[in-house]
Structure formats: C-alpha cells, structure tokens
Amino acid sequence: MLPREVVQQIRRLQLRARRAVEDLLGGEYHSVFKGMGMAFEEVREYQPGDDIRAIDWNVTARMGHPFIKRYIEERELTVMLVVDCSGSQQFGTQLQQKREVAAELAALLAFCAISNNDKVGLIAFTDRVERFVPPRKGTRHALRLIRDVLFFQPEHHGTSIKQGLDYLNRVQHRRAIVFLLSDFLDQGYERHFQRTGRRHDMTAVRIADPREEELPPVGLLELEDAETGRRLLLDTTSPQVREVYAQAGRKRREALQQLSRSSRVDLIEVSTDGGHLDALVHFFQVREHRQRRT
Image 1 (cartoon, helix red, strand yellow):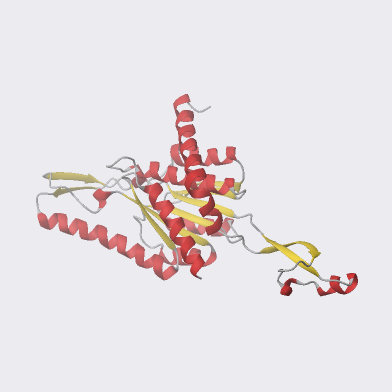
Image 2 (cartoon, one colour):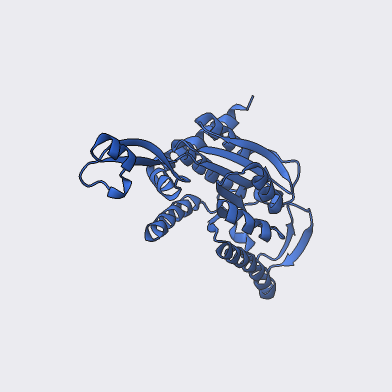
C-alpha cells in the first residue's frame, strides 16, 4: 500500500493534469492526433448538399433513388510514453527536478489520451528497460502510470535511448503516438531514433536544466555525473572554462535539433524552470496550424 503522502501527491498531480486537459489541451489533442483510417458506419438516403462521390450505386439501383455511404474516423489510438528514468533525471536547480517535469508531462499526455478514449502505455528505461506497462484505457490505469514515472526506483543509473526505442518497436507492432521524454544525454541512438520516427508518430521531449548550458562564476565547483559517479573539478571564475562548458551544452542541443529535423520528428524543449505546460500547449497549437496548411 502506498504511503498517504505519496497518494496525496499523485492526486494533486491528477487534479492539475485534468484541469489543464479540460481547459487547454483536450480539443488540441483530438485535432492534432487523428485516427489511423476511416471505418464504414451506415448507408442513408442522399440529401441535398451531400458529396455525390459518396453515392452507393448498388443500393441506389436496388432502391430506385440515391443512397450514400457514410464513414467515420477510426478514432481509437495508442499513446506510448517512453520515459528516461536514468540518474541524470534526478537533477534540477530551478523549480523542479527533471523527473518531476517528466511526471507532469506524462500525466498531461495520459489524461489527454484517456479523455479521448485512447489507450496509453509506459516504457521506463535507464540503460535497459526497467518497466513496461501495456497500453490500456481508464483513469485508474493513468494514475498507475503517473505513480510509476514519479516514484518508480530503477535498479540502474545509466542511459540507453537505443534500448528504450528498440523495446518499443518490439512490443508495439501497430503505428502509435509516441512521446520520448529524456534529457538526451546519450550517444549512439541516432539510427534507432530515425527508425522509430519512420515507424511511429513520435515526438521527442527534451527536458533540460539551465545549468547544463551555463555555469555561474562561483569559484571552484565539483561536478558529479549522476550516472557514472565520475567527478570533475572546475574553476568557474575562468571565462574560458565557462565558455567551453556552454559550447558543449549548445552542441548537444543543436545536434538533437538537427536529428529531429532530419528524422521528421517533432521536438518539444522544456526546462526545470516550470514552463513546461506552456511549451506543450504551444506544441499542440503549432502542430494543429501546420496540419491545417497541408
């Protein structure tokens, strides 16, 4: 049984997510993520203004006056949340840790899915897949996913985006809506990223902290890699040291931006500074506008 304070935290997150879905995201989600095809619904009599291309000529010939076929969108979708739970997700120098940001975004996306009667599942990974929750519907299922993202304690600390994406492609045979939530502090996953982008409708969500691209001049600063335990002593009073550090951070960000563009994968960039809901709303709005133009 979960401790009372844990249940209360999950409930608070549920209420915030539901309010955001009802006020901001529900309609955008439905219009942005379309069904995978059209399903036949009925044959009915032709009415003035109907598209003549929809006339069912066989029924029309039998009945002696025009009938048309009606189709509806096959709406039910599968949403997969592929969430990085590695050691670096415990980092955060602003309002939240990266893992808390990931949990809030996962909650928002999960409630968007279930409010549209879609299925949602979870793959939590470090340098291996640590947990898989098959996609299902319902509020209780969404709450379980939130709990897992927020409180699940992985056994390992490293990162392998490749492992997470390969597992997704093994278990999810049909095309799905995929949100990959990570800080992308990893290497060697690019080919798997591109392959998944071709197979699914994938959106990459980069969760970053401002201190990963900018160091304050506070003197000697010891940094520890949360995944390897490696330590590094930096003299932050040196402008050269701060510039090299900033360049490395910008290079990682620009490389992911280029990979996303070349793979035709949407990219949402969020921070631990608390502006991630605005970033998600902006993404939905931009994507909806783009679809209207095509």
